[in-house]
Length: 202
Image (tube, rainbow, N blue to C red; front, side, top):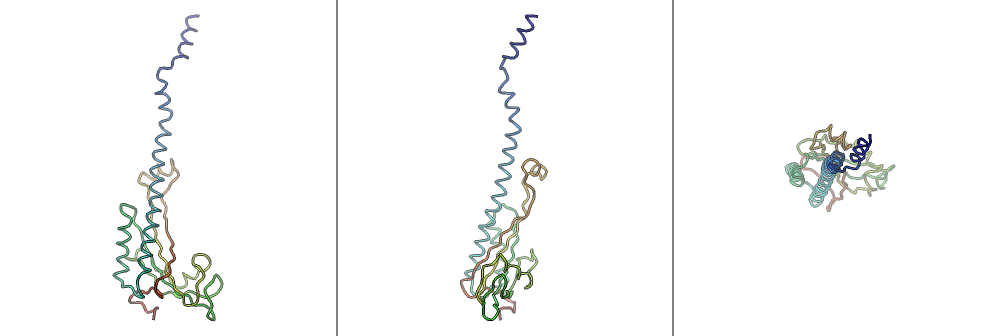
């Protein structure tokens, strides 16, 4: 009996294999942390790179004089693809508008209307907007404009898909496939931005 107690006490005090046991307990947490860092980094990289590329396209457009050609507008997709290398495909839509204030006033959330100059997506990847569609932007998306003042909007859309399987990403990390976008309002350096072949700028 005494020998049995002695052996039991020796077993409790024995620390052989302790590091291996702790390693096995921590291994799932380490794997989760690696997967999480990889997926979170990919999400933030996609958003950040797309945002910078969208601002680059908006700046390029702001430097153009009144009218841009259709070839130039379609070429902006190539610019976007170049600025987002190895990332997820990005869709673009460019919408140019002008304020038509009531009695010479400006365009606010309650007064004035937007006149659509053009809405165009390179390659037709995104449906163009109508004049009725852009009126809702007055409430929150576009600053107050003076009468006849013009701005254009660059919208981007990127469908993020995790590099790892969706089930792993969603269950382990909480990141699921989603669509991220940018909405950038820019004032042209000249009076307004028009698209060749449209009659709305006449």
